[in-house]
Amino acid sequence: MADSNFIDYVKILCRSGKGGAGSCHFHRAKYVPKGGPDGGDGGRGGNIILKGNKNMWTLLPLKYRRHIFAGNGQPGTGGRSFGKDGEDVIVEVPCGTVVFDAETGEYLCEVTYDGQLVNLLKGGRGGLGNWHFKSATNRTPRYAQPGEPSIEKSVILELKLLADVGLVGFPNAGKSTLLSSLSAARPKIADYPFTTMEPQLGIVSYRDNKSFVMADIPGIIEGASEGKGLGLRFLRHIERNAVLLFLVPADAEDIAGEYQVLLRELEQFNPQLMDKHRILAVSKSDMLDDELMEEVRATLPKDIPTVFISAVTGFGLTELKDILWRAITDDSNRLATPDIIHRPLDGHHRVKEEDEFIFQYEPTEEELAEAEDLQQISPEAWGDGYDWDEDIEPEEEEQK
Image 1 (cartoon, rainbow, N blue to C red):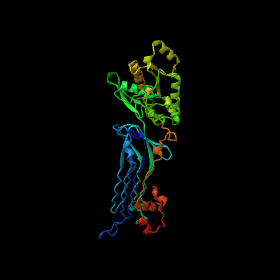
Image 2: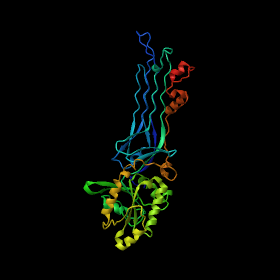
Image 3: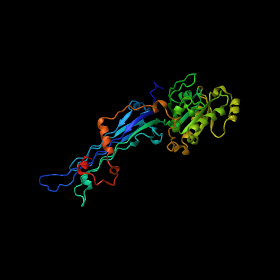
Image 4: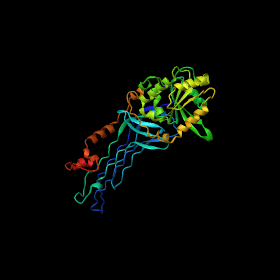
């Protein structure tokens, strides 16, 4: 996976912009004896915004962009002049990207369609100038609000491919061969296990110029939900599929047993996967005659549709596409994908090399000095109540 351009898991450090400080200024003019306070408000800090892009298929650009910082708001000035707002940073991500807190593993948000905007981190509000605090009893307020601090958070972006049908099966079950037969995709096909090292997508043509998307993930082995093999790394992509197509070869010793093993691994990974439509396809059926097919069909579970196929000869592929299309267009299945419940990241669902990544970032002397100033400010200053300490000296108020 080190040489692959398909990146579906990346850890980045984000920081929104801090709000600008309000101005403590008084209007002074030669022919205006009573100018009064006219300090302007500070500008708001920039936001970190995620935007869905249907033309992106990997998180590779973010792997080389580990630090994403928004602009800070500028302080206000006299004459009720507001400070400039901090510049927002829009980060384009593929559709199907899910964001988790890197420290706690908590689910934060997701981007599911093209053009969708999600405000990941909100910039700090700008402080109010002293002209907001004037009143009949306080005509010369010598204080103004500071801006709100920025929000810094390390997040994990996890890509879950959007597809209508997901192929689930053991290694060498014929998943890549089936995808190449039904679509124009050309996945790697060989006679050894784990030839598919990354998910593959293909568009399957159907009747009347209709089509649907099929996804092939690396083979799953028993224990994949606990971290064995490659299944755990790519099981996340199955969560986005509307229909699950289980593929078991006809030469398997126990077809029903292998299906139950695959079903158990999906349930342990995410119990919500049991609510998806499931279809069982027996691949490599060109080695079976009609009598053997009936004997095998009698041993298969009765609760899911079953079809015998051969991707090499084309046997049963038309029937398979009909069954898949009916499952995809089923009314009970259309709202299944948006309602997905994302399980939090735990030790089994993390990628070790990304989770241990250390952000080599050192704050500047200016940022350290600003942080010390913010620690000296009363906590009441950040709220909307404007409860300021009246015992502070005017010189200290002007500095804040």
